[in-house]
Amino acid sequence: MIAGLDFGTSNCSIGAWDASGPVLVPISPEGPYMPSVVYVKRREYSATPIDERRLQVRVAEALRDESTRRTAAKKRGEAYHGLSEEEIQTRERRIMTHEAVAAAERDYSSQTLADAIHDTSQLMFGEDAIRENILAPGEGFYFKSPKLFLASDVQPRYIGVFTNVITAMIAEVRERAEAKSKQKLTTVAIGHPVMYSSVTGAAGNRRALDIMEKSAHDAGFKDITFLPEPFAAALNYEMGIASEEVILVVDVGGGTTDCAVVRVGPGRAFGGARDKDVLSYAGDRIGGVDLDFHLAWQSLMPHFGKGTQTSDGLPVPHPLLINAISVNDFPAQERFRKSGAELRELVKRAKAPEKVARLVTLWEQALQFRLVRSAELAKVNLSAAERVDLSLDYVDPELIFPLTRDELMNAIDGDLNRIGALAREAVQRAGAKIDHIFLTGGTSRSPAVVQAIRDAIRLDVPVLRGDDFGSVTVGLTQYAKGFFGSRNR
Image (cartoon, rainbow, N blue to C red; front, side, top):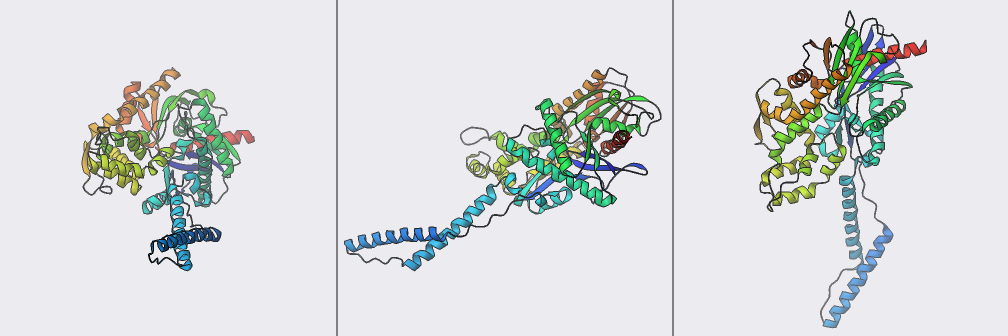
């Protein structure tokens, strides 16, 4: 069967072509969307068996010490009641056992993701990962949106780790879809953002696509092609129109904003190459996760020590606070996991120790993902309300405070301006009359995002929307049918 795969920041979904056309395949208990989250339990480390030779060396050293003390006592004319050889051996064996257990505990607590992923069969995805992290947040590594690491400027040692994670995640989606459809999926069109990251640029994009292609092959797909996600959304829109038009597609997802101006029409489907139908692209790595981060930074982190000082007059270090809420930045999360001693010392020096103590609780119970999720829910609720009372009682039973829509808008103003600028850039590059604006992507549901796009492009044309989460997947499946069908002919 021919498939279309949306490897998304927030969710993964896959479509297949059947007798009725492109359809979304249910791959989770909730339907066709598997949350893009991963959990892997920490690797267990057993205490190393006692080295009997080393034990005898230690016993011999202890016996020499005993002999020295006994001789010294005799010279002083004092009685000496030392340990027997058997007692010394028992003591040293007990000490070595405790040392081995302590070493295993250090290995367990200090391990990295690379240490934990010694076997990708240990990985859990989607709902299973969310449930495991709720039950045992401190016993494993939980991270969101592997897609965001594809073109990130990360240390080389992480690239292989995340390639393995992405391969396993694609394989999971494929296997779930095959189990549901009862057919093999080996041919696929995979979506990609216009720009994975402006920081790494074209080189980062090439690296990301190379990783995705290798991962898709290793996950079992044989024939693979790629398509920019806003173009895929345009193809989905095209399935429901009766005449030709030019549309501006704005896909605001969890991690990226992708825009395209595309000429669509009912006679263009399966018409071969469509490159000339795309009049412009614009995109960058900005999306819902950025809005959540900035709201958390602006309105939540002051309750965890942001803006307070230590006894020597210095501010509570921002890197500690930033690492705590950078849940889509795995190196930052690793730094936060290793900051326990620094955080405990900071409580002693803080002028507002009760706030920094909450940061310690966050660290001890691995609650940083839940904290950012609280910011996300507040963002959603403030789309319909002027004020919400945000409870962080899972950190501190008394931590409940109001958030207003004005606070939200102040926190995300820069993000909204950037999203609007990308839409304006696509329109200006195209130089064509726009008939409709087609919005898709979960973050495009926000009225603030819609208004930012309207304010930026200033076009008096209808704004339409389809399936905010499925339009790209359906479009990819539609494209795969035309691409591989024409190639086979």
